[in-house]
Image 1 (cartoon, rainbow, N blue to C red):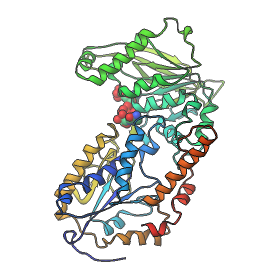
Image 2 (image 1 turned 90 degrees about the horizontal axis):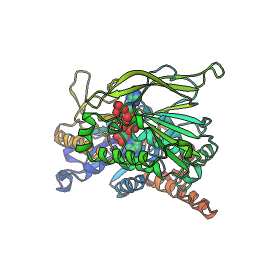
Image 3 (image 1 turned 60 degrees about the horizontal axis):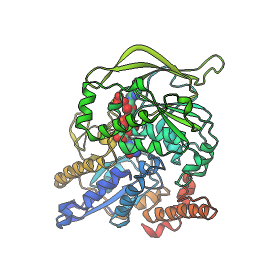
Length: 481
Ligand code: NAP
């Protein structure tokens, strides 16, 4: 390991970014394209670390496989990493394989871009019953996350999905869609088999506020109506609009579009719901606040129903309880009420917000002062809100501050790029590289192509077991770093 304590001004600035999802890739891209770098005032050398063997974070493990926007984003991120000026090091877990002191030794600046992958808690009675799930866990399952069990119990005929965000819509769409219609996507084989065997007939999505207060977005809402043999069902008594709703409809085009879509759907719906013809139904309920998930004496410990309090809008766009309670027979409940960040070793964590305490991306110590050379970006910086594109603005803010601080960053004692690789090798860490990802990517496409040859039209089949991902990625890895 080289041990030069040269000042960063005499050599390329060494930056580690931890997390190769959109937040990490955007931060790397923005730094390499900054004016200082373009004008030749600054040279940067960036290593992008990822805990999984493959890059892309929540794009690979958090977005529904049938989502039309994924491909464009994956292509954009691919282009950035394929340029060759950002080094990808996958299958390396921060805090276990490399500690913060290790990073401090090799890099002048460290940016945390670890995102938020856990489900936010919903503290209601019955949440721990068998059949009650976190939506994010289910997303990880259908996206073939390597650390999630391969089996998922899909035994319920009637399912409740709690929340009115895009994750709730993704979860509800995947639960209600016929598995054969997902075969064109990249779903893993075990996911196809699980969904194919699902006996589901009715998926109920519950929002606690009204149709003008939904958090999902127009494209995602419209997508629901594209599922074959699935009828969307709405309820007239849920269509309540207060003054704040009217204002939102007037001032926000997205809300206007979505309220328009929902109103058209309910207008087109037969009055007698028994006239609906599809074999599955996706119900959208509003003004239902979750109260309790319950079992019954015949099925102790298992979800058999869920109660909600009916809500009414209070004039400000918020909802208050009416004191009226309703019950739905369901055998499974998925809460999709938001993600939550996870604490990382050796950096602070705000347990109420699920973020690393920071000021514009400068990570703070317990006294509230910036820790030199440590930054955060993306959902671990600001919490799990906003579409993927919003993380670009975030990354720009963090990188701007890092560049402002550049003269005072604590110089890494071992900045040579091969030093970190030597340490990983010395510790026996099977890290993966960009070339390794290209090999895995080609392998997954090839698997899809072979299925397509057999008439199944599959674009890619994800490799799920971590060992297998690593093995395919590491075919000849040593020469590639
Ligand atoms: P989200 O957009 O914040 O939505 C959370 C939903 O849960 C809201 O409807 C919220 O209602 C509700 N909720 C929160 N606490 C609740 C409680 N105690 N009881 C009942 N309902 C509760 O979160 P998300 O769906 O996890 O999405 C996170 C971000 O990822 C969003 O920005 C989303 O757009 C993005 N995303 C995008 C896509 C896509 O583009 N396809 C896919 C997935 C995720 P209130 O509004 O009343 O609080």
